[in-house]
Image (cartoon, rainbow, N blue to C red):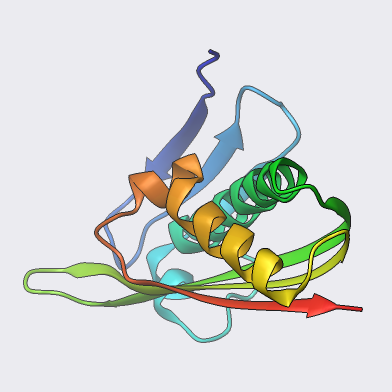
Length: 145
């Protein structure tokens, strides 16, 4: 299996410094990062590790859920997945305090119970969920008809 790489160049201290995260494997983007924007309610066009984790988790979860829906005999027409990753204080420093995964699915061939079972299983088995076992994850899943 492949290894993917990202690189961060950082200049300065925590409070006055800033950096750039490069997605080296895909080469699709470079993003600005800074701690003051990371800790602020308004990100102001600057990303954070939490946003990047949210992107990784939502995309991984969507892929895993689509596979589990198919295994259960359903056909996913669309899955809209969002991940909200919260940063909070720790002693010392900070930690991820919670993740909320929200999915709205349009699926043929599964009823609500079947969709909920697949959604829960995807939460537990996607590789990013497995990597984040130290963070409480809440799942909000709904099936559109």
